[in-house]
Length: 306
Image (cartoon, rainbow, N blue to C red):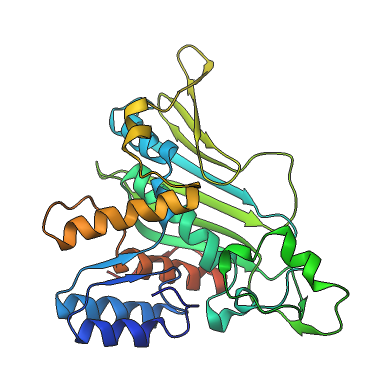
């Protein structure tokens, strides 16, 4: 299912009722109620289900997960995920501007960042707080965009010309979210997620702070570098991604396609009964939807339903 989010529930329930395994693009649904209904449908039908927060398959995220599991930075206490998306104010009006279609940064960026944090830490979300900001009030009506890969490219702005019509935007283009994570050993860590439109000279990053040190994952789009700070030596050191990890990744022309291929490789292997590698599922999509609703309501430390 790779449409905007509004029809996801109808499609997923129909597929599950026919006994079909289902892969669904993020966000899973436009609200937590529909996301929960989709999870119930696939579980009741007994079919496999995957949710496309594919950026968790970045090589730095994979290696960071191993380093944390090996105890390199000790017990993880705090996590930061910071991102800037550039200025989309001239992007032609499309589904990304509409909450009813699953638009906005919470639905389309936070979902990826949450997936990275949950994968690298192995944590489980127990409570959340947050707020969302609209930031963009209107968008120009321009060429219809069918291929999402073209949406943020410079060509789409060049085609637009001088806007003759504008439409109101109700989607969020900035957010601050905090979550409490129950870590595998039972202790509680906190994670901060921030993102907004606008340029920044600083790279996006994912930082994990532990009792022995810090891991900082950076990259222009998807994390592909890791630096380690050790509290004992008080020095930073780059941690090259091991060749065996790079060799294990699917071959593709770009990192976006590579990560999609990785998810589908794991999903198909599970469908065939060959192996299960712990890919993201509708449960992850439902958890994200619950957190997004908490943030949009501006609520503080609301426990997540079980």
